[in-house]
Image (cartoon, rainbow, N blue to C red; front, side):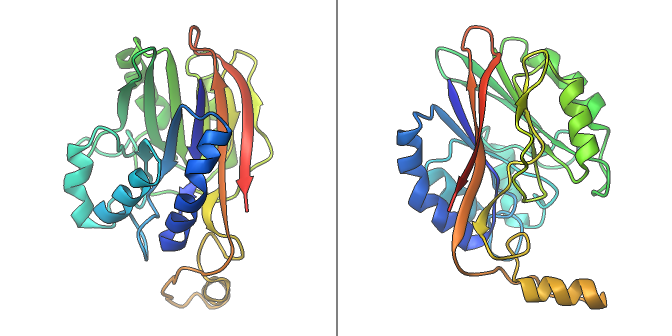
Amino acid sequence: MNILVIGDVVSAAGCEYLRSVLPGFKRLKNIDFCIANGENSAVGNGITPFSAQYLFDSGVDFLTTGNHVYRRREFYEMLDERSDIIRPANFSARNPGKGFSVVDMGYVKIGIINLSGMAYMDRCGNPFDAVDEILPKLSDCRITLVDFHAEATAEKRALGFYLDGRVSAVYGTHTHVLTADSVILPKGTAYITDIGMTGVKNSVLGVKSEISIEWLRTGMPARFDPAQGECMMNGCIFEFDNKTGRALSVEPVNIE
């Protein structure tokens, strides 16, 4: 089974570029299922019902999110109602949405977990404890994936080794930079520290570079306007054995 995971889709430019390349890419690579991180898909920041539906209509099958998931109140109802959109499981249980879901493909069940890191991130529960509580609930899922939305490389690597042999894949989101460390860990779990970004290539994480530079130089408040220009789609293709759930290959994706 080939599962494509797509890095944080940023603003209208990222959404439009994804729509232009994803359908053909899925056919080319024989993709069976596609997950995208949509927490930055709205213009400005966050995710809205419009941007989420735009991604679904473009060929995405499932959406994970992260620390910006609650920026837009109009999205809360959709987050509660849909089983194909999740938010980090280690956020408060009182918050809208859920942190994991099961997708039944008929021939195999896929468990998908969303977690947030603790280092340099918004306040949240311990992701190691959260995933330990969730995994028994996904015992009938042959394939299990974890989107770890985190800042620190060490925290992501640690969770990867912690879950090696217990899940099918651990992949990082949030830093918007595709990393060069894709690997199958010793016990069979696929891992990559970050699957990058889908959005404007010549930008600072999808934001106009001049705005980011001025903010970092002066510390003064700034409105982070989305960049415009040539785009890219980053992500990763995981190939799994349907019978065992073990990873067979890991292929980073960078389409420009």
